[in-house]
Length: 553
Image 1 (cartoon, rainbow, N blue to C red):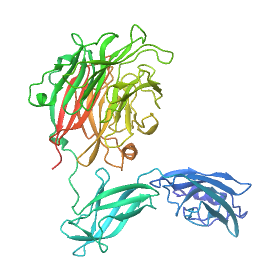
Image 2: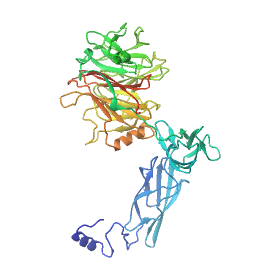
Image 3: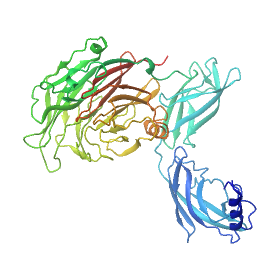
Image 4: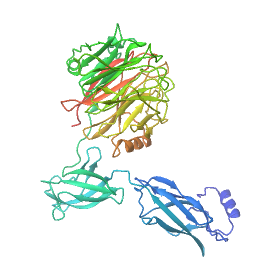
């Protein structure tokens, strides 16, 4: 304890008679010499060494049981403890690679041995390169740069023909590594090859480059906005609340309008960019029924999907799913689902499409009001759809205009968001929670919900974009926001790093719309054929924007 007042010092002296000092460095002697462990936990557990893992202590048998991740540094495990006054452990760290270790508690001349056992779980983490150093031809020490997004190690010795690697730091710590093109202990610029990692069967590889630190990311300072929002002049279909869902694949802006009729429509990127946007209505063969004939939809590899809205699922108001093989195709009805014992109520306010390039995956619907359940229809080859959906339970309520989107480049990882809440979730295909980003007081993360979150990699950086929902007068304008999630080897780790930071917005653009009762909001992101980043945001009473962003130079 640090002492700032004489009265405190006197009190300390009276209470702890016989001690020479009350400073932090004092080792207190306990005349009783007790050597008990009251609590104990591994303090450097897991992949990064930041995880605390409590042990199960049996004082009678003097045994402790731990279950720890394989990624823990098991050759140097450290403990956080509460011990008898004056007691300490006999070591700063312990090698538990055999699955056991004796932990001795020492107090003056007394000691007690506790027998600790360690159940080491199977490995789950992909190994990574943390740092690397080498010596170039001129004898200079070069510190490299590692990009987990591009999976490239830059040695930073671009004027050298060869390099001798001196230091490689990896996570987890017991990861083994090898170079695919090493000769006589050196790497050569003409063919640097790769570095291959292996952690107990979990493997990864990084390309090697002799180049220096590259210029990454998007140049948002020169972002080009094609504005059809209330900020300039709102697109007519969005003036009221008759268009509540829109999607974007980099070439097509697809929106489900019922302004003046049933109007599922597409606007081409090239038309918007040229200054002459034209809405092209899709075929409406077979589209009928429901509270609204069209409501939400999505795009998958050139295929378009839409649904109606049913506010009372049943024989007279079924949930329907429609499909177009391309922009010129005849509409076909894939699903015509009526009420059954498991599915009731209101469906179709939202729809998410998560299909791979072969047309396999799911069509998703989240309950409108309660938000405590989801339906997913299994799809094969784009058009073979299970007529009975699976019911899946989200980790949190995802009511109103919920969305699930795949994280680009990370199989089986999805963002899950809703206008109902501000938290952004990271889940697997069965909606099991992997990580989350919560609002943080005093940071830029807005007071309104961030909806339709999407994660995309572009030019060596990872970005997440959202469009905030706008309901009542206390909400801000519906706004496209972009966040930098480049920190971390994957999106799960990036969520953790972002949560610990300031939640700063990298770039934003307001659509300036008015309050509305149908407070949906959509985003889109893709890399265009010209290699530039293309973004979209849309919302009722706000209109839409398309954005083009070039690479940083």
